[in-house]
Image (cartoon, rainbow, N blue to C red; front, side):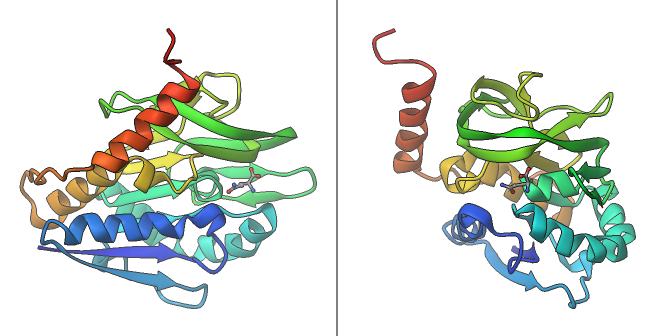
Length: 244
Ligand code: GLN
């Protein structure tokens, strides 16, 4: 079995080591004997979405988001088709904002890819810090780090990725974080996300293999002792204090 990961615009969208998410996906495939390759795309490259099994859109500053938004208009129809055909996407922070309808800044509005019914508006003050949430998709808590000026609001019927146990999440008010739509996960969590949350990495790999090979796939379990310990450490540090 083989998977191809498309990394969109890593020269611009790669805050807080989001590239580590690619390394995590590649390693978790390799450890199971699944072949994996990553294709990094720059703004002038043509993207053939049919060849891709997982697409990663990382985080970026407002300036970098403005620089890629022109390009997004061009790839939108193919990207939309990929998503509607159950293509797997992991979109983080700036990339998460860009899969929505728009990201409104104080003096400009960035048109998004409109892949998921959500929009983002900048408000005074940044939402920064560690974050922990629980997601109905996973038994393990989801942990990470957020830093965003945008507040994201979901359209009716769009499911959040999880409920915030510590931190801010989508808008600092709703109590929810991220989205899940078909095989797309959008989230504000950097960190990088996947080494800290191997359960999400495996969800993406499993969905991608099932789509590519057209049958249910069960991934062989990995030991993940350090990953679980690190995840639990963060959970206990911020949510369930050891003395409780
Ligand atoms: N520029 C966006 C914001 O500040 C996203 C930042 C990020 O990707 N960390 O809201």
